[in-house]
Image 1 (cartoon, rainbow, N blue to C red):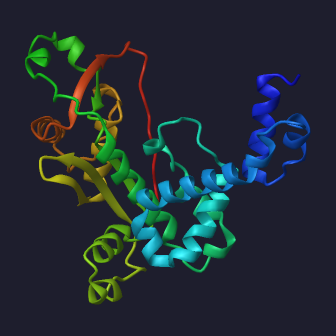
Image 2: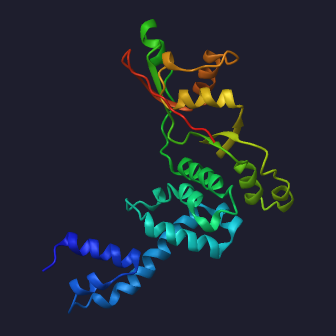
Length: 263
């Protein structure tokens, strides 16, 4: 009698690689063997539908047939690791960047990356903003060691193409705006967050974004790389006031956190 692990591995190959020989051998004489094709179609349909819900703008840009083919291939090579499908789809942007049929749409991966950030913001837990009184109690020496943690709905991304303008035009179904997007207008630096009015996407200047990314990704205050024209206390106060910071820790004097994200 096959073990559960053997059956699961055979089922995975059958469902995702369309090769049922091993599974059929394991289930020989069982009433379940005839159900494999039904399960395969159901699994792939469900995964493609999940990706459609997370990437509606990508689908509109390339059409339903192209998207379904790309989504099915992604599902085969990167199946879910969790049963919670709201978290499925991370990495689709990287997949599209290397997906040969999408090479004629070079901005598609950036649009997918933006859509995933929006999806994460939509499903992020509602963490309360940091209680500022906790900062007031810190000693002067401790203040330099502060490392902030952003609200789970907040993210900062840098993109090579104006994906935010493409996304807005498609969501608004504004064909004139879509036609007017200058694809070669250069990189954009974005902050995505969920507030009372829903998810917002804000463009930032590069230096402002670079500092925001460091603050929101946990770089210790003493290790921040701040351009001369940026008022660091003012930037920190702005993010605190906006509720983008949920908590903080104190790093050891020799610890720092670095982050890099360039289009």
